[in-house]
Length: 207
Image 1 (cartoon, rainbow, N blue to C red):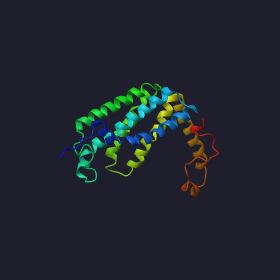
Image 2: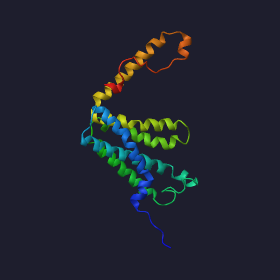
Image 3: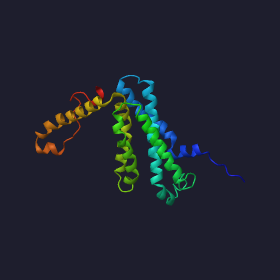
Image 4: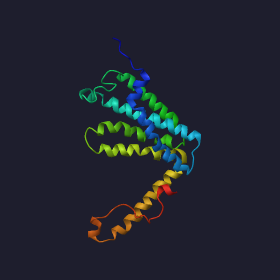
């Protein structure tokens, strides 16, 4: 009785859950469309798409690679590609390098400022597999890393001037909202909400 061997590309697609990458693309597209208040150029959309594919493939492959030993001891995850021997550690390492290369090539086709910012998501990818071993706060970390997609797409199109504007507006909103609170009574400060009132001027995305 012959055993059907799954093609190598299909094994890598399962490793990174390629269908989840497709579902994640709209997060980046939202930032891109908001950045131009319309339709981005085909050039920007293509390279943002490739950057997302490279980044998410790297993140998933690193997660599986770092967790391979733990997955092998868990019956629920022992059938994954690395523990089951469908992919070797060396193959996944090469895949990580290629995914990082795709990410960097795409980054270099976008606004020059992102050439300095690309290590930020990569650090997030590496930290998450270790963080989830020690604290439930890893979920917030993962959410923050996922939240980089629309911000990254926005900055990749508009550049450093808009990034500076976002930071300054957020800082200004924080100062304006916290100023009156410092002058309020002590009982009120104990229940203080740091959310700025709706009437406090424009938000960063309304520019």
